[in-house]
Length: 165
Image (cartoon, rainbow, N blue to C red; front, side, top):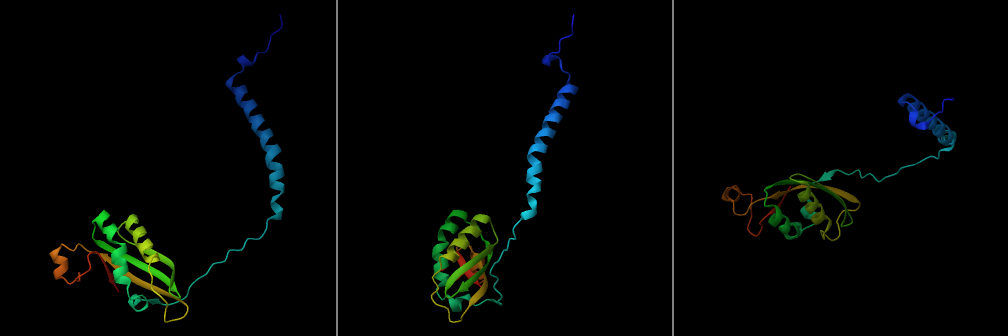
C-alpha cells in the first residue's frame, strides 16, 4: 500500500521551511526592482528664514497697550488655571506684525494661551525697520495674595498678567 502524503501530517519543521521559502520568493520578486531604482534620487533643498537681530527688552516701546491687551486676553486663563508663576516669552515683530512666538513656563495649556494672546496683539506700526526680537516675562500673580501686593509685584488695575522686562 503506497504511503499517501497529507498536508495535515506536515511537521512544524516543514511548515517553517515552506514559510521561509515563500518569504524569500516574495522578497526576491518585490525588493529587487525597488533596489534597482535608487540610483536616480533627486536633490532636495531646504531653505528657511533666519532672523539675526539682537534681542530687545523694551516691548512696551513698540507695543504701548500690551499690558491691557494681555490682561484682557489672559483673564480666562487665570480663571481656568488659578496658578501663579512665570512664562518667558520671545516674539518676532516685523512692521508691527507678530511673525513668531515662543512661550516657556508653567504648563503647556498656559503656554498655548500666552502664544494665542501674543499673536492677537495689535501693536500698530513699528518705529524701527526690519524684524525685531523681543524677550520678556509674563507673571501670573494672585491679586488677593497680600504678600505679592506688598512686595510691589502687583499694580492697581492689573489682576493677573504683568509684563516684566
